[in-house]
Length: 278
Image 1: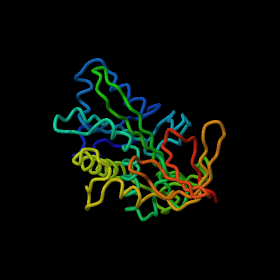
Image 2: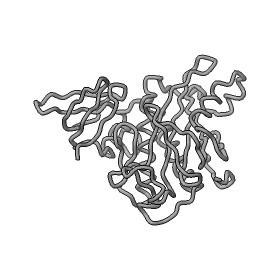
Image 3: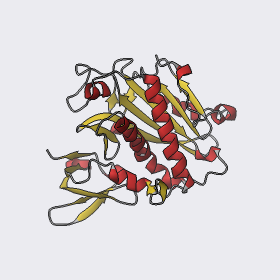
């Protein structure tokens, strides 16, 4: 189990470590649904719930995600902009939280010496294989205020034989060394907090310069593995579109150029899958 005393993230309002849980996202949503205001207030503006033993994790489109206890870091960030009277982050900017947390994870994995990059819309890849999945969910609290829960699962100490599919990998497999859960969680929490605070400071404008003079959109584009790839866009009803992923637009949608030169932007809610053609 993660030793909570070793996780020191001063940039977060609350850090809770669970011995085990069905889903950190479900647990977080339950906390925000508590009818007793002080129980919700304890989470502040930005908090974190984590475990290394998640029993029934879910990903995008309700896909099941599970791993042996002690091998993966499963975390959920509780984001409540309304808890900070000075925060002017509009609800319209909440859809960027998925890419913001993905970007933070990429920076952590790069610091470990990997070639991490984002696979649009919500995965982190190393060597072309998945190491993280991110799932953001909007929550309406009992007082009618909007919050968000952003879950992320990180494959840390899975051995090659532990990996459920050949399209996944782990920090252990990629680097040859085991990772300290507490240190990894501290790095992730600090990095997400830094990106979130910077994004909030520019009012949720993804095109506004923030860290190092780069906007969130700039950084997402610079770390997006999907760009430059030939992809198949799988749409509802078994419809498919094939083309070259050429850009991430100002709303976070991926722009795909088809063979006739037509360019169309696809938002997360438009597609079932987007997969590279190999």
